[in-house]
Length: 216
Image (cartoon, rainbow, N blue to C red; front, side, top):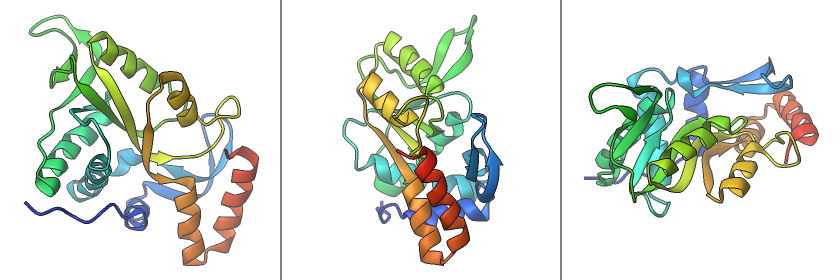
């Protein structure tokens, strides 16, 4: 099998823009902040787009240690982790078990909330799109630890690099509290570098102002 080139942030940003996953403008977030950009990886909703995202996740994971199982939090993380397992096999010749959780426990058949690969005693990487408040990641970490897993780290598509409730970002809070690494395919800085390279000074100025106000 052939190994593909390393992850290219600019190519991923252009893919996200072409699919409406990433938009620059003015967007009111759930937090009430008015953001100069919006990102929704759920819009990578066809085979080509999902392949591009999964290729990025897979390339990043090949740079990480202790990848014994990859895990997708329900619901959005499920297609992400399945596609990533395929990309690891096809692009890097590595077959990694994968699994996900249900929102509600199944009371028949095999039962429980975990589906797919066994996680007990395994080093597990969690794959998701973004960490906003960190609530969902904390919940799935608890589920996995209760099942006997060791959390190796978290991989997300975007790190917004902005403060949460305090001086730390949501990602920094998760890293500090859970003592695990959190990696991202792209960051707010990558978006700013992209706008600078494209000469979009108006959008870049709005990003810089937002970073001054909320950035870490």
